[in-house]
Image (cartoon, rainbow, N blue to C red):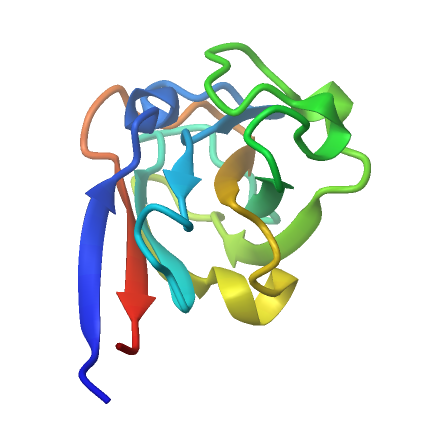
Length: 150
């Protein structure tokens, strides 16, 4: 079976820039159906603040999905540019990353389908900053990757 993968820049990657402590923002929609995805992951880079990072700081990654592109987990708008942390109730937590050193570049690849299955037409990852300080204004990036096994 031929395998192909497609990198899709996260549409709302700017939400990672200067992401306030205790705020959560979505990275935008990836359409699994359009991309014929049999598997999906997120590649993430977050540049932490130069000072003020908590020794117990974390970044939490959550998944919201939609079977129809209209109704989303927890009613969260996947293209929101405002803090959605107060709405996260039933979203699947994908990962908790250590974010506990000043000026640390946090890098992670998280497999979405192994955590939530592939029953969603569309999906979105939310990053919740619990590091103790806002992320830096630049140096952040996120890409979805979909895989088709032919």
